[in-house]
Amino acid sequence: MPSTHAIDLKNSAWTPLHILRETQDPSSICISTINSPRLAKDVPYANAVLKAWKGESKLWPTNDDSDKNMSVGAPFTYLRKEDGAIFNGYLVAPSKLVKSAQAHAAPAVILFHTGAGPQDIFLKWKADALVQKLQCAVLIADIISDGEGYAWSDRDRYEVARKDILTAYEENEEIARWKLRQTISAALDFLRGVEFIDGNKIAGLGWCMGGHPILELGLMQEDSVKALVSYHGVFDGVKDHLEKMCKDAKQTDSPTRVLIFNGKEDPFVPQNDVNMAKKILESQGCDVNIMNFDSVRHGFTNPAQDYNPSDAFVYDEDAANSSWESTINLLRETLI
Picture: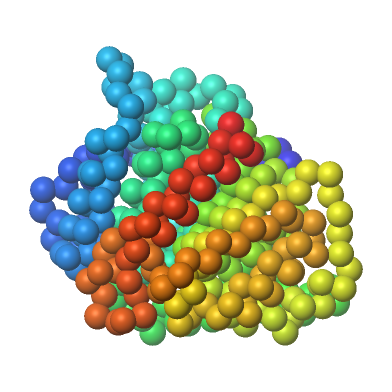
């Protein structure tokens, strides 16, 4: 579906991501300022992500024209047209695309955040990695209207926003999480307004809370969405109002391919919820595969979870690497 608007790229504040990656004072990204949002819970969190980000960047290919392949990012706001709610996305792309602005040149990947919110340095790392590996564009999407990083500290405000976006209600004689769908549509519409993005080649990745928009995107049956991936994604509260969808199975010649990565010891994601999500997505024509990791708990993709005081959260290097490698392979098969 073509966009009805164009995004102003020329006047945007594009910044090379390697500047953030090489942050010398991690405490500087643990606070919110007038010019920048808070990107980390604390210094140990920031250090853990930065160390992993720097380590991975050493494995990326380099050439003589390093500026051409540099990842650059810029903040953008977009509106949910139904009520005018403002969301705070961050677009990352190869510098060569931003400079040339070739029409419909690159596929795009949307990243959906955890309960830490969209202002998370972990997502900047993953966006940079995707750009370097696939030369695609990446939108870090916002589903709770968090531009300053309030989710790191104001948990009451976060819980209100989470409940609001995930509540199902009836509209046009159908019960669904309409606000979440409308918010996802706003992000899709934003991407389609970027001149160097191919709006027909889009994928979505979600972590933890981001499992909800991954499931919802599969139900929305957007032809442009070719692949979806969930990492320790939570699917709580969906069974009662979505189970009925399984009764009317749909078929498609080009199904959206879905990968669900889950830890068998994850206390927040019961296997029954994972199986229900698979059943629901398959009923809508998706091709779904689940990879369950033995002895793995919640948050296994993020090395900063080693500093989480809760035993429910533990980083697992093998599970993190295996799920990421499988994701890159899927995106190459479906987008490139």
